[in-house]
Length: 210
DNA sequence: CACCGGATTGGCT
DNA sequence: GCCAATCCGGTGT
Image (cartoon, rainbow, N blue to C red; front, top):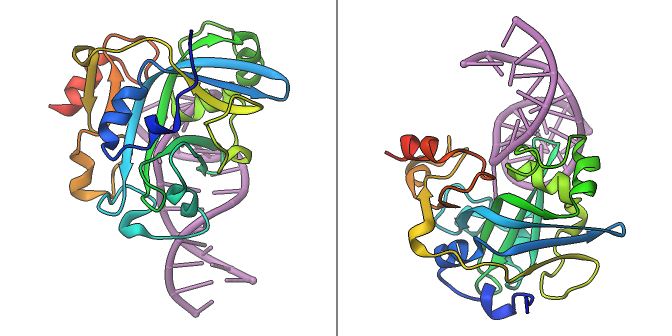
């Protein structure tokens, strides 16, 4: 039986391991009476206080970042470029701003709802292959910010799905790190090897990393 | 209270 | 490949 991920899954200090362990898990949304789900295929870790790419760099506490310090298993959603809602999972101890951005999912169910929300045909590769794309497809908005992932109810949760072996995980530098200086090279992005639903094909990842 | 810019996307050249 | 869309949080007056 598939089961919802427990608090202990998120409540770990090795955020890079949690980022890798999220690959292959099933993200489910039940919003507005419509249920959709997708397998997580690409993640990025953001770890304050040392990470200049994190909104909470230096443990900066603001109205936006306060959710990042919430207990493990909390949803952090923020709006990017005024248009896109980006979904993150809060990990580690309360008070530690360690979060994981989900960058892409492989559609599993509710494709008809995704199709309507994204205004495109179901089964297209572009449906969920970006951090602003799958949130749109799954109805994830800032309204879910600070919600918990630990209960299967209206909203969002994550379930076991398939296991991804270490040899099938590719790591590379994160996206959009122009102002993050040395942090821009940290290989804190993870994806499932040969998966067709990530935000970039494997070849591009290798070129950018090396 | 005004201004600046972004963990992106999609449409047009 | 280039660039506008679109708006809120963060910062400084």
